Image (cartoon, rainbow over all chains, first blue to last red; front, side, top):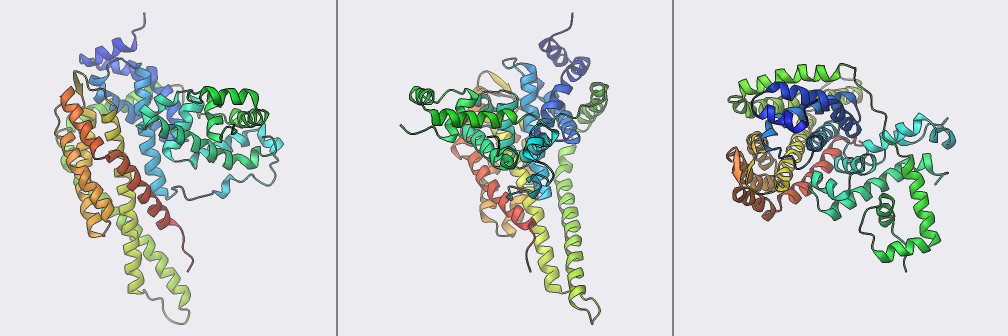
Length: 186
Length: 260
């Protein structure tokens, strides 16, 4: 029978690194997917996976099992993703600097066509890039992962009202950015 | 009764509590609000996650391969790497400053060459100085912004911990040790450049980082509460956010092309 996460954690705590290998193999793909949704690319997501497990290994003594192990890992990964987004945006100088012309639909794309195609998804991805790190994370967690606002607040370290406002801002911005694509339908 | 606000409609779409009985009832009865909610629902239903670029089939094994070397390296070098951190930060700063200075200089030289068509290209020392100064400012803004973001997250993680029994804070402690070295460096630089709000905040941050950096592996509930109280009393997370937002704006402004 397969060992549970908690059993593996106990094995690592008692000095058995093989237990950690099993945890990495069990959860690295899930962490990669979550990080990809926030960072938006494979290379960054892969970096987040490495950093997440490195931090988790160092903090394993503190894992108390109140949250599930994947939830705990996700929280580390989200913080790592935010660090990375912040760093990337600053280096590229793309910090809330207004509208992005690339968000406008291409001339040959009519709303009818794009709504049912990949272009909408690409537009969503580009619109997500325009959000701040906190807005993107709050939106990803609420909208894609279905996490309640209260739990999102714990991840971001914000009060409930501030968390709500972060999600509201994200929705408002996305709606404005994607309006050219959705205008005729909503 | 007023119609639901856009924010209330978002809460309603996600089925989050907090709408209030009166507002929920209004939504049931009001055609305008129901239409608005339907419109929002159509939009949000279309916002689907980007397709994840799936890694190769052996991703898990490769991840472990790379990770185990880093875990070994971490154990072997943990006693000495912190000593090198401040030096590495200085070198990185100098390197970035140099690279940006060169790139700015190249732009200045190019524009001078275009402007002076009858004479040999010459470099205006004042323009040089300005470009150099701008590059340094930008480097400082970038690294300080990152530093604040990382500090903010360490403080958030600590304030989120439940103070009961003894708690292992080695991860936060190690990160605080990293941040402490760079905090001093950035505070000095901010002071030299007259960035008073940044310098003041880094000055307030330093004793807290110091306290965390010198904490034992396991802190008691009382010790953890003391750290949390200190962070909260100073409103550090909020201040970091506010100043970081200013730094972000300045960074964006410093990268925006100017019309000459």
